[in-house]
Image (cartoon, rainbow, N blue to C red; front, top):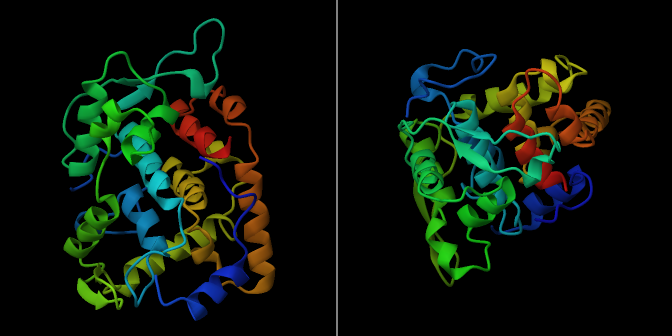
Length: 282
């Protein structure tokens, strides 16, 4: 998966918006903080947060030109399973293998209550020998050259996540006609949820900036990395004034310029989380 260099500049997002016609209950989350007072009924998974940042408020769909969000959402699924204690990376061993050369191990087969997470977990549980992070992202997104592995693909992920947002009262469901085809869209219904999400992301790199990723909430750190990998992080920064925008961009670059293998070797880290980061930063 090749990432474009740096973050997409704000003017591109503004131009696209102006010119384009386009297009369970989290009971066992392991996280350092809870989301800004959200109730259990409206707490979002990492995948839902990334998709919500990517959805256009009024149009209710992601950019037709975004070819990164598909794999980004699969990375979210891996991290979400790790934060819930379901999967981990195998031990590094004496040779200290890199994160991307180590296999994902299922440590807890208990269902999470989230259909997408449980579907991915079942694929991993049924696969022997285990596979690497990079391989699983390719399998789950269908970007594999091995036809025997296409059964692992998670289909209609964006639509399924959007329906979750509808069920949680964040979005609604509509039909739009695009001349040659009709498309189901999910315009924003509850603006407060996305407003809190955008504010949380902005504050994490501005007023609440912690110049140490290991002191940041893991879920929030993952949101920043995966939103960047999915090319939707810019949407949270577009409303900022020029000075804050430059500061936010600079601090995100500091995070994504970190060496995942070095960071994962520090005490008390989530190695799989850094391994997913490495898969998108390589």
